[in-house]
Length: 372
Image (cartoon, rainbow, N blue to C red; front, side):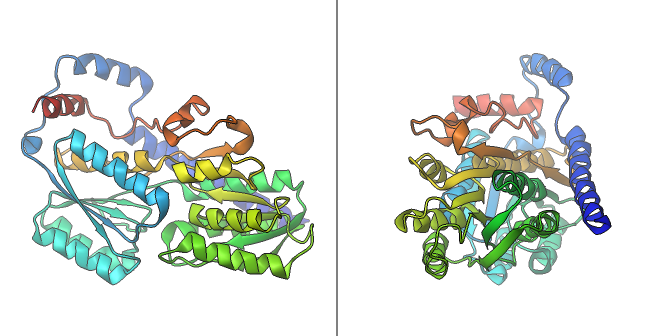
């Protein structure tokens, strides 16, 4: 009993630590509401555009991989924000090859870009080229990466909270007891962080048993997952053999959901992480087994990353780390009629409205670009 309480205390400390870290960084990255109100009033007087931005800015966005609609909506957010600022962005997809990703950083350096945006990747592969970029005055903002280099801002979705909110919902729905399948893959910074919480979850809820665990990141992750899940369902053919699936990525959740639907095993519920328009369509289907997911808006992630990059170019101070607040989205809270991500804030008011990394001159810059 003492060991169980020690684990609970450890998990609570971890989550509180993440929250405290988030709060500390938020104070540096996001203006208080009162201050923001005053700033908006002065913005009406046309805040001057920093001298460094009086030219088209060149951005390189380098992705470890681009799979599924989450990635496509993230790219859309990056392109949207760069276009509003009158810049130019080149997207590079390394196809899950970290060596290729590092070489793309070298390519961006040789092209004399103003800033590099990194999507995923690992420090052991990217540290040297990123340090080279910084030495040449190129600014770097990373997303879901484990880089820890002075001058680099790293943003994430708070993967610890993502995993905990989904797993806590699963545990409550199962009343702390049942058999689950876990879909996870290592080798990715966000996945490793989510797994830390999953391991604590297993100790916190010992009566929730893992009967199977698998996961592959490929060019066809959702389809491969569906095939693997179909095999699991054949291995456990009876109702009650499997109560739920914990999917650590929406591509995993899509594959598992389709396999469960085709097998007519919709008593098995799916709990995921991440969200996109395609995911919403699947979640909102009648009797969909996918009942909950925790996510941030992928397009807003891209927009925030671009804004941090422009602040760096303008010479402003930016935080070393920033975690966007994730939201639990439950099928029971959504309307019966299909909606898109753009409409989700009608049912979750804080969705997609981070108000992070916004400077007074950004409005002036956007207005200038509109007139051109």
